[in-house]
Length: 112
Image (cartoon, rainbow, N blue to C red):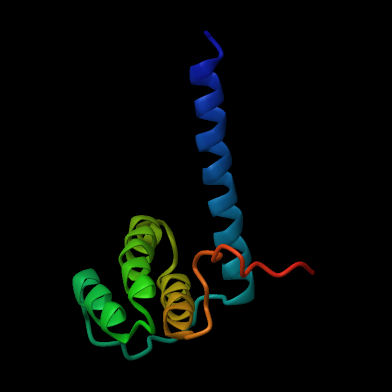
C-alpha cells in the first residue's frame, strides 16, 4: 500500500504535463500578438453560465452548461486567455447543437 500515494502523484503529474503540452501546442499555433489589442468587455463566469443555459438547445444541454463552465473556469487561470476564449466558443457550439446527444438512448445506439 506504500505505492498508493506515489501512484496518485504520478497521475497528478501526468495531468499537469498533458495540460502543459496542450498550452504549448496552442501557443505554438497562436502566438501572442505583439501589439496591444482592444479588450472585450468584462463579464463574470456566472453571467457566462446564465447565458449559455438560456441559449442551450435542450434541458439536458442546459444542465451540461453548468458543468462545462465549471470545468473551464477551474483550468482558466493556467491557460492563455485566447485558449479559454476558444474553449468557451467550442462549448457554446456543443450547447447550441440541437442534434448533440449527451447520452446514448437505450435501443437507439447505431453500430458502425
